[in-house]
Structure formats: C-alpha cells, structure tokens
Length: 90
Image (cartoon, rainbow, N blue to C red):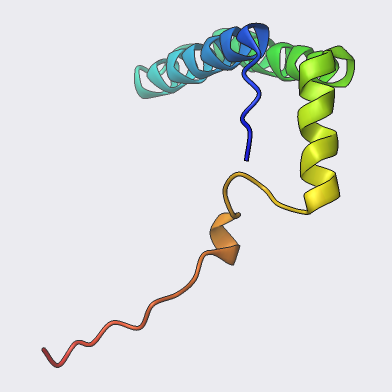
C-alpha cells in the first residue's frame, strides 16, 4: 500500500508532539494552572490546524479516500489488537 508523505502534516505532528512533551514537563514540575491552561490551548490549536490541513491538502485527502475505499487503517486501534494467550505453566 502506498504511503503519502505530506511534509506540512509531518511538521505539524512534530510540533504537536513537542507541545505534549512540554505540557507533561509542566505537569511534573507543578507549574501554575494558568500556564497549563495556555499549554492545553496550544495543543487544541495545533490539533485544529492538523484537522484543517487534512481536509484541504490534496495528498492528505487522497490518502483519506484511499483508506476509506479499502477500509484499512495503517495500524489497528489498541482495543482491536489480538490477544495472545499466555502459558503461565512454562
């Protein structure tokens, strides 16, 4: 299956990961609520940018239509992962 790489989407995803990391460090260091709220706002803003980008980018739209046609996702959801029995006797 072809993978469509969109550089802008990759940059936005990297930025989102950095914001999540920053927020996590702020939580660990007990920053004031005002700063945490600002960090949360930045995360939501970037998520909206990603959503808007995926709606308007031709390569991202093509990927979404390709996935919806074939009904496949790149990775299964965690709750869909197969459960393998563990033999505790050995």
